[in-house]
Length: 173
Image (tube, rainbow, N blue to C red; front, side):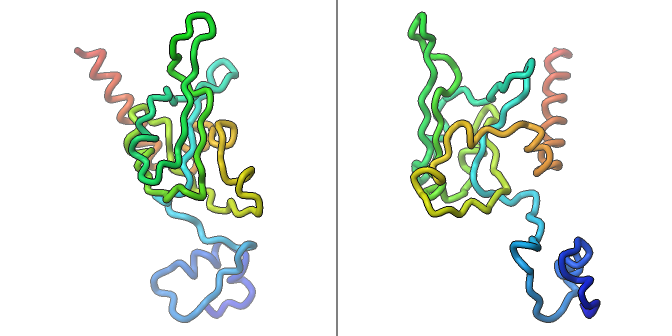
């Protein structure tokens, strides 16, 4: 670890300090320098959407399972209704998560039958205004499936393989 200034602000320096053979005390120069988070790191949930014909199509159907399994009850969902018939539409019109109450357990992502909720890696959400900044709405929660593929490449690849296997099983039977 005695490489002078090379050890700071470089990917090589970070990897050197993450190595299990490294001995001694060292300091991560946060916020200029950040240790990479593991793929399974989980923080605030987010909603996955797919781009279809240039429009965002949320995977969420507003079924409410995530809100039911949430231990601190920090998720609120309002289901959309068809303006002509008044019948419910399988899409949320409003979706809120209070990130100050969320305990990052990941139950919402585990129990979602549509894989619409995933756990994010963005942990830098500190602010001074709790009411405006810490209650995430649909716009703040929605992120593209490409973002999920970037932060969790192993999990994304596994899910894609499972989808392909399901599709081939359907066509064979």
